[in-house]
Image (tube, rainbow, N blue to C red; front, side, top):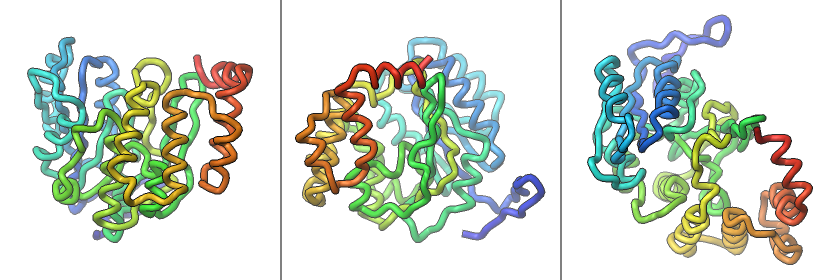
Length: 304
């Protein structure tokens, strides 16, 4: 892809009309206050060639009125509505199908883009990779932590053990359409499944070490990571992709199910996890899931 960035003092960039259109898809339902903050973060991007496609999945609050007003004020906001809820993945697929951009990326209605989100992904995009993604900022409320902060190529073997691609990516729209978009039968881990299928189809992905996406886990939203559906999603993921997995992949899938269910990690299971990767995080979880004082200290340090 032709590089249209010219570096200026302060690491800003001149953005020219040669830059491709990027479509941002956003499903929403009954989160009007959080939604407005998410929309503002898209409108504040330092990359100007963006369209924002919002699909209201049957909201019963003031979301429809707000979106009607915003779409009338901003030419690059397009708004669709399901009269009856069909689920977030159906909403995402609808947005992708009706998008016009060469590239697409997503934003959850309770999360935020940093101003350089789109520009940094586009700048580092390389068509040899299935997609590009970045590290993220996890907002616990009291404190924030950068996760998945190292730059790396993501192979299929890597991805089958852990969602190295995080929860959002930048990808060519045509590629998402070619593989059928999100699997609406998944109750969770739909993003993990879709990123995996992209790697299966198009080869390794690329993660950059620029944290430009903020995940809201400060108590103002209900994240899937804290629900039993999160564990069920990992079961669905294992059933769908197990034929591609090695023993280490399967061991990691078991660990993620345990963590999503917030079950204690036994000493025996911890030893079984040796040599399967991400061992430091497993030790941390072992301590917090078995020692109440560790869990309480974590909450005091990170949470409001």
